Length: 348
Image (cartoon, rainbow, N blue to C red):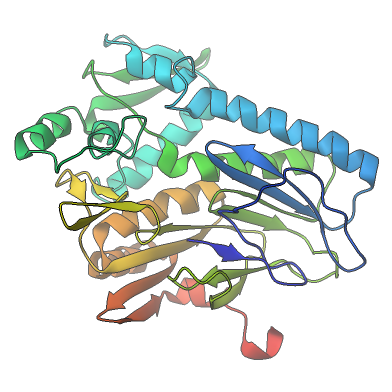
């Protein structure tokens, strides 16, 4: 899912940009810094920062994101996460406070979604060709799916918090974690903390499809984010929201996919079946206090499908916006909590 940047501070995530340099800002437009990380793009929009400060900030931002990628990447063999995945014992392994936080959040959301959001789904993601492994040349056999599923399960993972540090333990030696479902949100929150540490109070930050805002844009108005329609048209706007200092993230099934043996296979894997989802929910957008939380919930809701996602959103009082395919068109549902963020037509 994309978020669209229009004049005055609406934002586009999942950016397809060639340049990673600072963009000059005219009066009434934000100064924009951008670059690459975690196989996607990061972007920071600032209301007012001079050129020298912007260049220094860009270096700090890239260093922070490189450090996050060095912890969370499944593509880098020497990352902290890859080292844990390669470990074949069951003794607790020391981890950073950052990794303890992200995994604890993921386990909580996984429990609330009854396993629909599962960070141990890595073997299935790899089996279907959406991880470091290549895409298969035929649909995996049920025996292979069952074998991969036997290596998954949140019940096999435990975060241990002690005064002297944090540890991560698995009781299934081959357990393989994939934090890509929450990594963008986690990194986005990190960028927001970096801005605060640098004394910047008016900003919009994003990594991939996760966005978080604070304060006002260069026109001294709230940052506004437009949710894109589930289409390949770049500027087809679904709704416009004022995040009011919150994070937003969307999980969608209509962009990252491939076709095999006449079937369209989504990158969203249902841990309960071991297969790509096949229901008609095409996107789930969540607004939450942090981008990490939004990033975790959107994946779980996307796996659940429309009816169960609606039910869980009501139970948890989540700010959720769902788009469901209905034949050749789409239907939409939003929770009352999400509606509170929607800009009225007169305010746009």
